[in-house]
Picture (cartoon, rainbow, N blue to C red):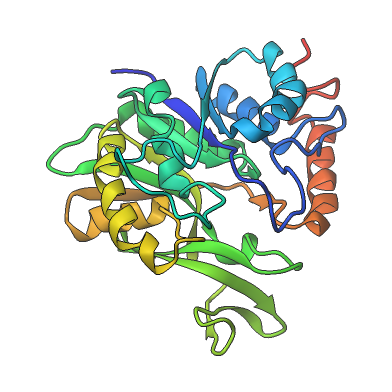
Length: 311
């Protein structure tokens, strides 16, 4: 069985954040959140990482994160998500479209770098915690498809993943008594308010409350090699049937692909849990709290004081 690979989605431009979150320093020696994720992943057992970026940020990325990762003991492979990549021959890109096609398309763009190995997927700008990487690596080291594909996700409590500074997008999960995912609903605008947490799907005309302990997806998935052929096969249908309704912003999301496989009875997804607290930088105002949290972890000895990749 092939060893698990870590796939890092770092192609987003950080529009709500106001800059390139992928390379923004949060550590004392200039480290980005991505550096901490790779450090934790390597400790958990991952030996190879595929980092997906866009050509537009390649130079800046390589001069900052890429240069630091030359000292990383993992094998680092790079893939590139571009709007015209992996499209069916002759597909006409809408003239007003300015960005690629979402997270499932992002993973599809790394197909050649991943091969048929089992792999975990993370966002580059989310801090998931050491325990999360350990549980997903342990799962992937043993996972095998049977009558159904055998996948996993690391779930987090919604209340531990929202920000005080604006809305967030989360995959709201339904989990059965056996710890299996039975449904996932992509909520693109979830916000805190004085009475709790709620979401809207109609631009704020109406709101639905969500309990703080609701399990949500933070795009930390574990897949066997069967997943990439599935997203490849479904991509043309997305382009044909979804994009025309919203040619500027329609996105081919990982949670939506997983939901389709669940509804068709083709996959089962174990919901794994981590004891760690998630944090991230959706907005620039989130950054000070992330910097402080990582400094505290470093002071406790969870990370080396002289830099993550220094011997």
